[in-house]
Length: 384
Image 1 (tube, rainbow, N blue to C red):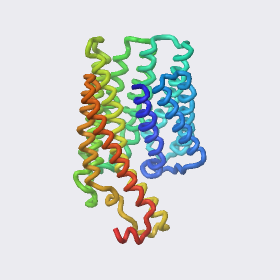
Image 2: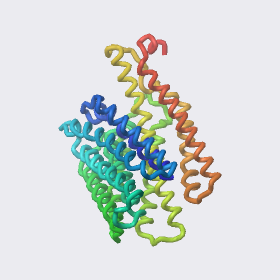
Image 3: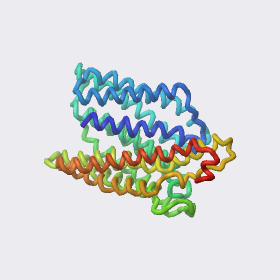
Image 4: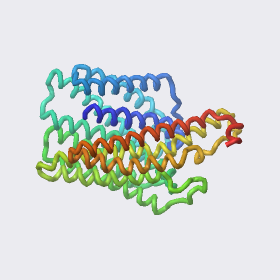
């Protein structure tokens, strides 16, 4: 289970966030982030580190986890250093920049904590209770890094997906402050096994509620949808399901923070983790990818034609029926996964796993189908 969790959180979520920054920075944040040799080194280190961590978790060889965690952490930190400098530009909305910079600060702390926990398995030296130390590390990574980053970037990407007016105002700052304060407090409280955990859980949920209120405002101030966008829109459907999962995860998280430990606590904790990591973070990445990859392929194709065109429009690149099938598989597989893991029912886990595997495989084929347009020539586009 630990190997699977790190494969999702580091391999899929963190890898997707770092890769997306090279597209989001120029397109949504209006700053240049060209890939250089250091970025390829960061990619190699993250890949090697993830393979090492998952492999050593699988074989239960704890001695190899420390170097694997350190390797993955080094890759993340190199990518962070590369991204931070351009993001300090005045072109980036200050509140959005705050989300991103705080997220990078948190992943640095989570990486250090991960290395310490790996060393702890071989040479115990950390004070406190091992399980709460792991919970502290997990929340710093999942909320402080992934959630804070997704919220910050979503303030620029969701208006492009819906479409709607770009949000501004104090609420953007409030979500950054509340989520960061709550995450830092949760991290320390869990390490110290303090009774203040519910207080900081409320702060985190308050920050997420502020974000959701901004999303509601976006929905009330939508712009006319471009005629080329097909309906139903798979990106919007994935984003809606991800936000519903976030709400459910917040409710369960508050319950875990306030309620005493009882027989149902492990099941609720499992549902909380799946809804947060897979339902919200992983599915929100799927939603954003549905818009980012066609735009990326279009820019690349235009560059190949010296910006003369014509090339296939972004909205015509995906295979729409396959996108809707992926949405259906996610909408079916995720609830089953939550139910199966929470109840420990193996047949349901097996079915949900197959559904999500098929969805992921089909989505990967779809990504290749889209990216092939990046190398098309004008004659190909005219023929299309």
